[in-house]
Structures are given as C-alpha cells and as structure tokens.
Length: 147
Image (cartoon, rainbow, N blue to C red):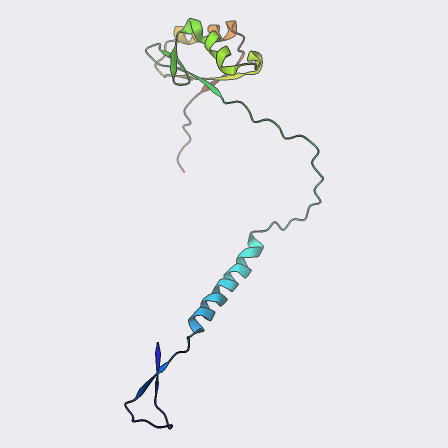
C-alpha cells in the first residue's frame, strides 16, 4: 500500500494520508510478457504444411488382441503369462485363453531363459505346433549400445 505525503493543501509536514489506488504496473508487465510468449509459441505448435486431406471412409480397425507370452525357465518350468502349466497342457490352455480366435493366426511370444535346455524348448515348440499355433516369435533382450 502506498502513502501520500501532504502537499501544498495543508497539514503539517509529518501528516501521512492513505492512498487506496491499486498499482497495476506489475500486472500489466506480466500480462505483456505472457502475450509475447503466446504470440511466439502459437505458430510453433501448428503444422505449416498445407495438405488437402481426403475424407476417411474405412471403418476403424479392431484393437489387436492381448499378446500371449510363454516363459520357459532354466529349470524346465513353463508359464503362460504368469501361470505355470505343464508342457502337455499348453495347447488346451492357449485355446482357452484365445477363445474363438483362430490359433493359426495367433502370434505366441516365447521368452526362454539363457540356460534353457534345447530339448525342453523343442518340446514346447512341438506342443504349440500340435495345437495349431504356427506363428511363434522369440523374445530376446535388447542390447543396444548406450548413446
């Protein structure tokens, strides 16, 4: 709050009157800075390439189904998702999980431990093929060099 010293209108030189006016200068300064920021930033947020886009007539596609992961540990334990399963029951369990979808079109992701025995891996692969699952992907760890 500001004070007004008494001037030529009277009062002693020690009389102080209250000034009830708001100082808007800082408010105006802040608003001008924000206006400049928005004026500079608005063109950067828009696309400058002019394109005449055609109308879309295709139906939106369905979301892909949830991926199915089979994990094989080095001690020959097999899991579908987070649940343990016997190798002989893989086909039955996978068919129950995918429901009415076609097993030949379903992609199965296999996560195998580095110390896994090849024989166990082949038993899992054979069980998948016997159940009609032919699209199999092997999951590995990405070892991209740090930049």
